[in-house]
Image 1 (cartoon, helix red, strand yellow):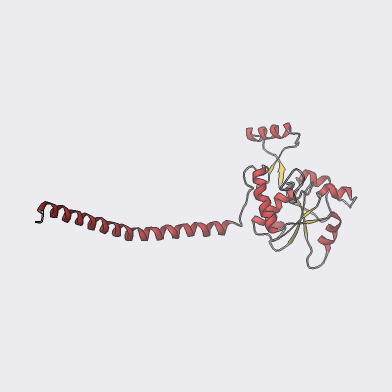
Image 2 (image 1 turned 30 degrees about the horizontal axis):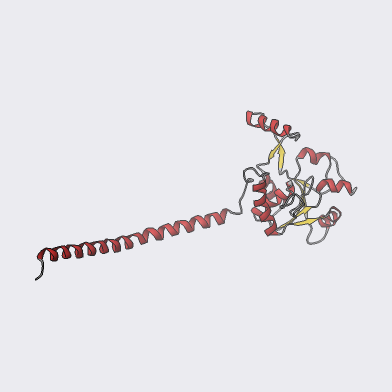
Amino acid sequence: MINPGRSVVATRSTKQLHNRSLAHLTNKHAARPCSARSQQMKLGVVRMRQATATTVERLPENATSPKTWALMWNLLKQKKVKMITPEKVPGAISGGLRKAKLIDVRPDVDFEKGHVEGAVNVQMFRPIKEWDLRSTLKRAQLAAFGIYPGVEENPEFIAEMRKAASQGDRIVLMCAIGGTIEPTRNLKNGRQSRALTAAYMLYANGYKNVEVVEGGYTSWIKEDLPLVKS
């Protein structure tokens, strides 16, 4: 004998399952357009980032920290930045179809004291000019480490570089020390320098043919190569 009460319970359970399944399908189909729109938005963000990836106007925060330098180093290794010895520079900036443009990235006060003939000064870092509280504190912090006069990032570096050289030019960068991306005994990512920092910025802005003077201006003087003084 069939229990009527049990039949009613079974009927209700079947209806509940049916309603839940219907709700699940409805929600599933309703969510699809939203999911597609979400994916399109994400794709748009990715494309926008890719489009702006070659317009990096300023250095990353804490540009001289080991962590940030490691990120720069990775890009420099990936791009296979070249080093050029001082004695090869005169031939590079005076020769043939692959004539290079020599960019001296030292502060203008150092450039005026002496530089290579034919070099164009585009400061990677410039002397601190302002005298507000922040600038004064920065001067004091740098002075505590024996760095005088104090310098700060040149916010116009890329704008000035665009005037000095195009993305297709062969560019040779010179700073005081040159630096290296090859590991040393104490530095697994080599030694950071202003020229290598400038090379990172150029690569990040679409420049392709970048070289750095090995040993920088210091090596140039040691080799007793000719100088121009302003």
